[in-house]
Length: 315
Image (cartoon, rainbow, N blue to C red; front, side, top):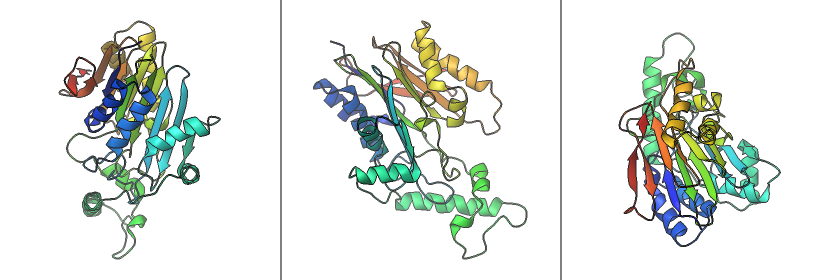
């Protein structure tokens, strides 16, 4: 028997309590991770996952999510999914019903979700529409040159998407993918991530969250890791796998996380933004790292009183 433990990135506190309730009752790590991320996806105050996520440059919300099981290293993910509020559950269904595949995207992922009976929903809230309209207005006012703007009355979808990607920035406050990693009493470990991706992204962009080894990796022999923030950097260094490889070499969790961020930080990237990671080992050790001071991750164990915020080490 193992001692259950669950960790999550910033803003995972919206889902960790229900996940911990399940774990403490003997539920599987897979059930707990899915439950945690579903609650986060339903949190309309969070604009980086699920319902109320921020849209792409065409005003459409596209969601990515993945799950990985440590004992088998089975991985399942969906990417660029529209109109389905719980991509983490669709990813789990891929894991269980379509194990010959690891990743479904776009129209194919939506077809699979429909076949499996998932309900659709309007993911845009009035608040996210207003945020989109404000950013669009700022972008139009600041664009220079000819033939880059829609004429009055044109559909906003005709705004040059690449220019929006270059000009738009995330809103103030915590943002990014949500990571959750759980170890259950049976010794199984599962990692999961869910995101609406970088706000105002080019349509069809898929970040590290849906890519095995980049934003999510779980190997029960050594541990699990997940990333949030600048997904393109995590993909270029296969960030989550690199953290787990560090654990396999005997690095302590904080050091494994910091080593990955250091390598990502050495890459040239004109669009550089914050990248963070966290990890958990099969014996319950955990850690996290970031490039900014004051960053934390969340923890629940039998010894904590609810969700405990743990400081990440800084690169």
